[in-house]
Length: 337
Image (cartoon, rainbow, N blue to C red; front, side, top):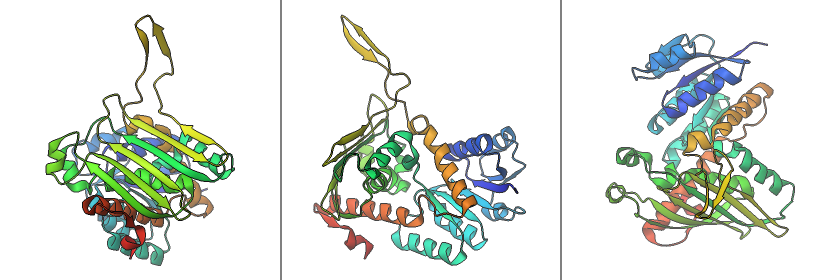
């Protein structure tokens, strides 16, 4: 069978992760080109024996017999690059979000549909083994109908303020994963959003027009609920937990640790802190999401995360921002309208 020819746009942290995983885990494809403007990109390409390195996206699309483009460049390039790739007839994997504007996202999705190509969004947490198990328990009716979902997502430290200024804010940069997770785990449509936010980590984040601590309540179309708590800084590490309570029982996914040992002495009990950040905590999920993307391309089946999933997560994020600013519950229809 002919190998899929893949190109990667962007060799930042996540681009390097996808490059490593594609080169080491998928013999059915070949990474033929990468694109980045950083000087170190030459060494990265050489390390993985990628023959073509370019600094312009149009040059990347011009690579002979290219099948797939993986977009890992900055957020403000995602929409333009996805449109260009779709019009060039390339299947696309794009990191979230497609854009920070719903109108722009819809424009991109329209072009993708018209072009007849496949598009998958990079909501990697759906593919984490722990969270996938919870989803399977929900699907198998092991806990009954979900009534309450609790999601805790706290980073070990905030990103630079320069990044926060262009990220779209915490809800569209960080919590967007949790909005997608709430939809994925429940299998339900979000109807209403209420959020409270504060600046409790770094005043400079507030000066940049953002928050760093929040609690969000989502109400689904059947009246069940999800509660999400976020903070940009947890001194003990990357805190990623999930609980689903239903009329037949409850299921939990806890943090991952380097080891699960516990030391008991007369002074007390101790053990490892959670895995430090997303590259460590979600390492397996990045491999699995790419596997399912490639499987869908080869089989012609539906993408496990499509453009509409991305659009709805952004809409929930915009509703949360509106809720914080206006101090009220916001119906998702207000945003989607």
